[in-house]
Image (cartoon, rainbow, N blue to C red; front, side, top):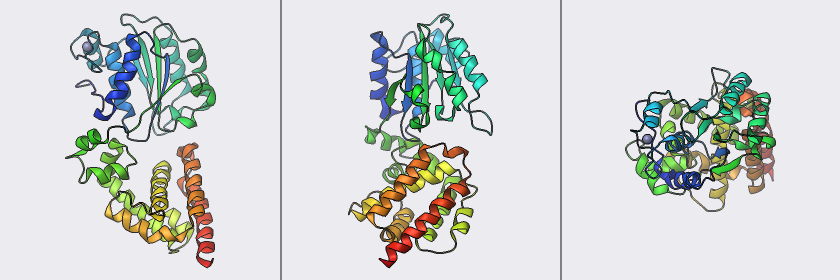
Length: 328
Ligand SMILES: [Zn+2]
């Protein structure tokens, strides 16, 4: 690491509140960190870990100079380990989790805490998740396990119930918009288009993401305006990540519902155009049903599905709904 990780400015209050618990000796041993995609879970968790381990913490910031901070900078801190999905399979392997758990239960060598962070914990398979249960029940005295997940609901209930939940929300929009200035063209629209996740807003402005959005907009338009077969439309999205397709459609669906209720919302011109073209194609009830199905698919392990199969079924049903709405 070149430098320590600053807490995202819009999450400083959350970090301060969590760290205040450690001073009172009330730090939870297991934390489940969740929040919408791009809210900043990774940097939040990393900055909290750094502050917890720092020997000379200032507010919610690590000092950057003490021995602990120097070890973090050298990626060699003996009391901190991090796990995330490996390789193309994007799963966290059970062996890695077991090794982490064994390590966590040793006594901290020098710091007041021994911390393990598992990023994208919703990618833990059942075996890997189960191997955490014992640690969650009897954590070492100084152990802190932080699980971070966008889709916290995808984790087994046995895990969720043993963790203290910390849900990160966008409570300081002004700080996020200031942070986005200079990174994206229109910070307000970009943040709204990213569902309140500033990091996602930056990702969305990349050339790859813009190309993906163009494909998704074309598919949405063709689906609702009955241009081309359902098979062809889902085919056109086959190289995109399923969870990206589902998350984007969820946002557009909400936008269509809001617009039907007279709320304009903020979005880019291209998105606004397509939504206004298609919002009358289904009744409110049908839009809600479509939204529920998208959300349900998005919450389940959609990453392991084949995009085409998932979307084709959904599109076929939606076509039927739009036909019945048109003939009513
Ligand atoms: Zn320090």
